[in-house]
Image 1 (tube, rainbow, N blue to C red):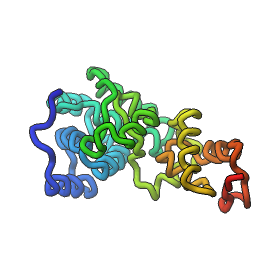
Image 2: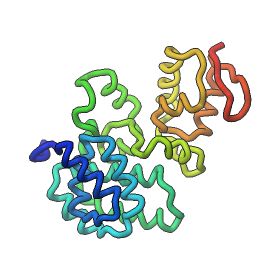
Image 3: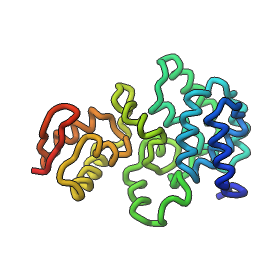
Length: 231
């Protein structure tokens, strides 16, 4: 597999943070390069998702495609765009246009065969890598990758998950396995505990339904203060 000529240094990553978080122009060439670096740095991936949401209308889809053809992992950017669409707020018309914009960029690229999205962050054949394979979010699998991270600021993730737009990206059997594992470690669970264990891969409403339906849990309290205790 062809890779980058060199792994980004801390100084290079910090420079990328500065460009993306400022009003400086981020060119299509920089976007393509930073999307490759994001595979080594989840923080950069989060910042890129935010930048995509705020700036995608200023980028030419065909220019991005041409720049990605020079890079080893063009669909690394596709995953970031997918998460921006899943968890970001856009009006209905913008969302339709964004879908076509995204398809125009990535239609020419073959998908990888379900490799780890992040490079060098997991122990080979370790528990975290196994969990990535078992509980991978559909936004990763759609583009040929494995991963569980929701790449938005977690303080904003909770707010996003309270909206109707929030997707549930883990299937019921996957969620049950995660909840059963959580109950091996905790005697009582809040909805926020469960959402964090899911890496925000489900809506609050779905999480509440899962907890309410679990045969080993008893709800105590009301609304936001409710906890679920083992019977």
